[in-house]
Image (cartoon, rainbow, N blue to C red; front, top):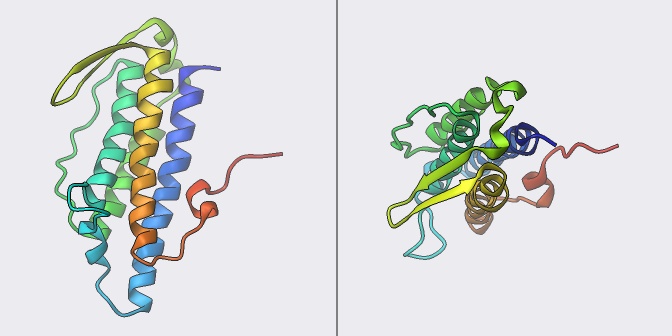
Length: 169
């Protein structure tokens, strides 16, 4: 299985599910006659990042992984989203970016060294290790946290919303 196959379709499926979850949160708030944008700053605990940052980081994780694995530069998104509409647009923009990748852009990437710089460290990975042990887990951590924030906020979500239309026979 190629690095493209283990990354891009997975990011796309989950980002589409995240978009649907965010849209469901907006519908939930509108049906109950409160401002859906209160969700954007919601946190599970004071020292945790709010929903808007969870979505931004999930977006950055997906686009950053695609760029690193294909040897390209990711687009810079400014992280200024404060409303649900802006967060939904951010996820859509990330989906559009990922849809532009072709499998052949990942050919030969298995042996590529991927460098990730964080505020505290710099990590170097072989590309496959990067996907398996950093890119996907980090991405899912932030999507899951966004889901949990909305569920905690009263949005009627279930596992099917998170998993979405999983391909099956």
